[in-house]
Image (cartoon, rainbow, N blue to C red; front, side, top):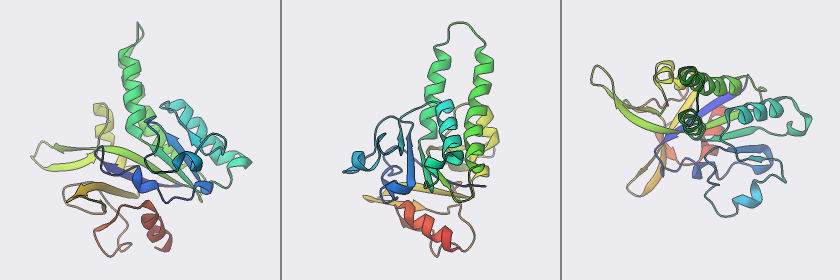
Length: 218
């Protein structure tokens, strides 16, 4: 069973930048936002010629790519898969539903929830030596009891009830505070979580490789 790490945060909080130190030769990057990466030299690290980059906001394409990484010999060297972002796929699918002419839109909305849940489950079914890092936009909401919490932003009520974080063993919260980018690992007002004792502090540098190293040594 593959490991799944969630990285949540608002736009501009450093989610994509935190992937900068991943080894390109062992990483497959799925650019669902279709905006490219945001550090110097990324195009030489991730591209179709190296067979480690896919620019697509399609759930179907992403699911097929995860299957290929899991099964095909040419992808046996891949240890990390980045999906950037899950919301990019959900928003694209929502726009396709809204543009539908005829058809059952109610069923399509149900499919949207199933697609989002399905991608996370697909990630969990990968080889034991693969870690999938799913980048997600965050939202701060207040529940019926007035409790405010920052969590993964979802499209549709069904995914809100499912709680995608429940399928992830680790969720880090990317934030920008006082001009500095960092990961929050645990906070009362968020769904951020890490294994007990894996880290000595509740905040670390904005770098996913620090998280991966700590989890490997845990």
